[in-house]
Image (tube, rainbow, N blue to C red; front, side, top):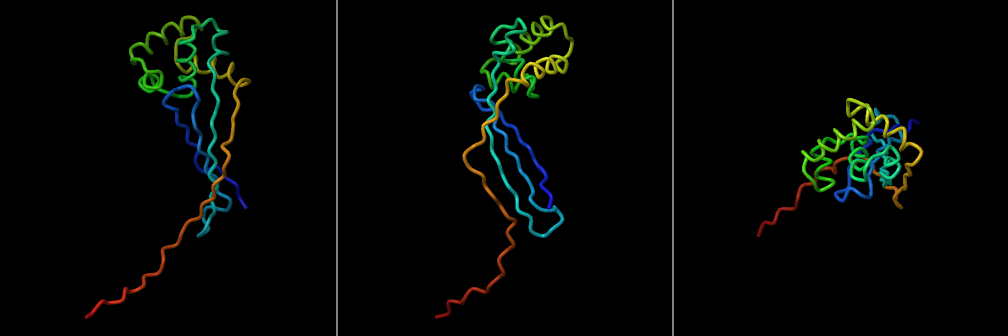
Length: 146
């Protein structure tokens, strides 16, 4: 039997503080079988921008860099942090200068190297199992003739 990860979704929390939620969908059997059980696991990832402040960044610059390292675009980061996208651009200009990099990918790489030892994942207290459901056979309804 296979145990394959089918999907791995990450969604940032609106407050930007608790870190992203991750939904992992695993297949417990080969995908080509007619019925295959799936296991859904939801995890909260605790993200902390404090380790990024050791790079000489302000608290806000560290928060912006944290979300860049998670693949978020400027508009998404602005929504998460409750500020304008133009402000995010300015923060990133300063982050790039302080880190001595020219691209957001290079900045994200620096951030991920710092964060890899500080990340913790906390599983949610439940594990859901789901099976593909076959449609019920069609049964004629009794006619209501008077």
